[in-house]
Image (cartoon, rainbow, N blue to C red):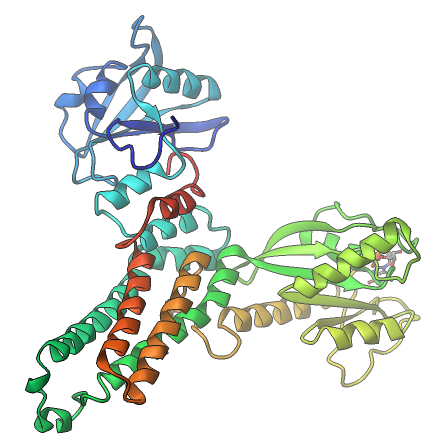
Length: 469
Ligand code: GDP
């Protein structure tokens, strides 16, 4: 039967660096008896199992059966529980060739250790109480960070800012729940004095202020997801416009790659091209769409359909109009359908370029010469900043943001239950009904951090990690 994350009996090993040629390849091993088993593959001044935690040993990785040397390595020793996984662990820094890595991994497997599942080291850290699920997800987010904003947010989550917010919300709810349950158990102890005391909840309105504050904090967290996701995963920016408007020229210029087809014949760019670039600290997936000409059937019509579909899904659309041809009804139609579009009036270098329409917010540029393209960059950065801030006053820079869809779904469920509890309390519903909603809300927070979580959650979360994490 296939191993699962919960099979924690055997030590695991994996290549922790990307496969291929590099200066170093790091192989990670973790688990009880990991050091003893690794000793069968290690030849140095001392056995690994004699080494103290946080020490380095120089030596050779060897074939456990023949004793043949595989590579000269440095082994970093970590002793549980003071290790990342909480278990005894070794990291071998080997030479970074695929040949070394494959021989070394095969040797380790022959000592009876198991190849790690994706994210299994982090899972063991979680199961051994070294991290919660929120910080475990932050590890994957940090490893996948493509741009500065993603790195900064993921590191903040890894250091526990988001986990503390969840824990503090859950504590507030559990305290209130304890208070309500005490009242349910000892109703005769409710006195009029208690109800009147400043800030103290009356029996009919248990902890209204606490509930309202939890609700507001949960709303803030929920709203932060849009910006958090954008900062983590990057923004989809679609370059649209009629055929010949200059989309491919702009795409080429921005990406500084000659990957888009530049042709004077309309309709040459039939599908879209894309490239990842960084603008103002954000990862941007820049997409050059097919021309938006109304075409009858065939490849081009499909291209147009897909480009319209992409524009609909874009975080930001950059629309080019051909300044030499002037504004067409198709241009106007598109813009009316895509509010918030950044509009470029292209080809200003051409002597026959018409003046940009007044008052429409058109930015005059030349995609061919690169004139005034800084205005596009500034407009894009401004739009991305506003989206990342949640557009309508969500988390601003430096605030706690979540980027995990799993967490967002649970935060929204928690918010729903917390709201029901607050509304119930305000309407004077029986205490046990309020307690039910509150318990449910606290449960969702426990699921987020992993205090309450099942195996399928582990598979989903850790299964998306890279090997060796
Ligand atoms: P697309 O169909 O929107 O991708 O347009 P292209 O980028 O293929 O450009 C179509 C034609 O317009 C080509 O001949 C380009 O050289 C020309 N073109 C694009 N941008 C400019 C510009 O800023 N100035 C001038 N003068 N010509 C341009």
